[in-house]
Image (cartoon, rainbow, N blue to C red; front, side, top):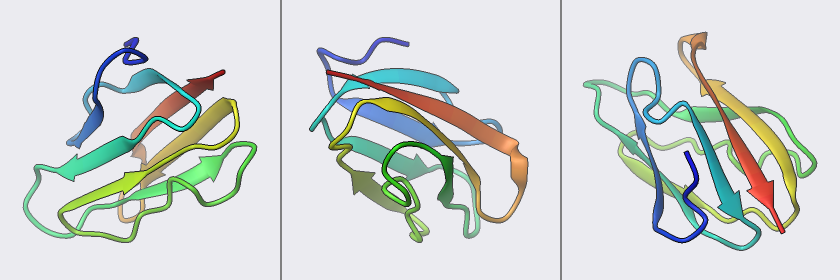
Amino acid sequence: MDLTGADAGVFFDAPPNPKCIRVRVNQVVTFTNILQGFHYPEQTCGPVPGIFSLNVAGTGSATPTMAGDYGYECGIHGASFAGTIRVVP
């Protein structure tokens, strides 16, 4: 889903919604946990390590500073709650 011209948000659900998004460099991406309990995104790959690893139970934000593909998954459930953020210049 192209979110380069809008607020970029991911509802951390089972699976995340939307599962794949495209944003611009320096655009804030907000993760909102809509599940009960402690679920949080943990980055699995990407050109800047750890930028999308947010150890939060509710809402957390990150701002990518380098273009590339960033994979993430739930720190509790792993790949069954996974998605990708494509960051473009």
